[in-house]
Image (cartoon, rainbow, N blue to C red; front, side, top):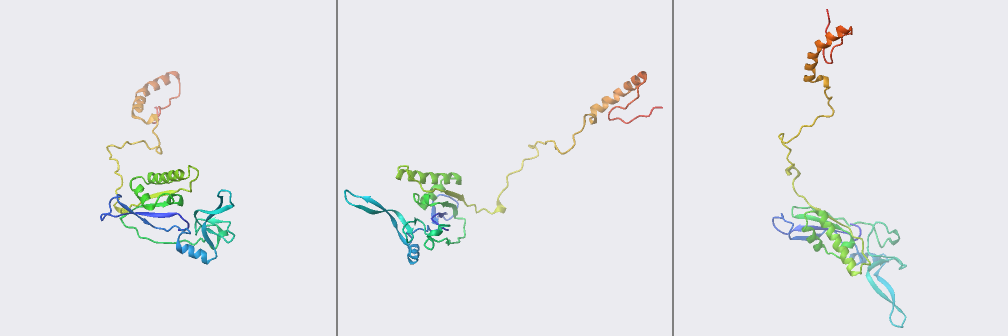
Length: 248
């Protein structure tokens, strides 16, 4: 993980592990922010500064006073640039205080692990991990769960800032399937009684002259055609689909 996005696992607390009800949130990553004591120590040792933004405010008729507001940030030595994250991909001007080295962790999933949630900092600033897992557990559709998590976070941002501010909000929800692929049942194939046979377009279609009724009618009319042709002195031609008959 690099930055302040977070991965949360929804783990079933029951012994059977077959229900999504009562899932317990387990953080799979740690937000890399200046409030973490280990990150703050690393930054200060490199010569960086960690504090809130300072905004000049006038009180009464006296001179303006600097007031600390907002979350703690990482500042360079000039004090002109402050970031709310201690690690990121980019922000080269803040090196070595803000670094791109990720924190890597491994975890073996088990049947009790039911839901995985990925969210950006705009989600976790307004929704805690357990609440996000509780929302995801209510839905059978992970897309609907992700939409509700993002919608609640956005509503709380707008409510607290009078609709003026909202941080980046991205949520992804995945349901974990622990079923053995070999044991999964494939959908039943339709029986031969219910199947409709359609003509194969690649096979040649029989011509009209090849059908049995047409051939029978041609045989009945052949003597009449021969007699009429002899009377008119015309050359005798065989009917379509019949062999040529030699005349004596």
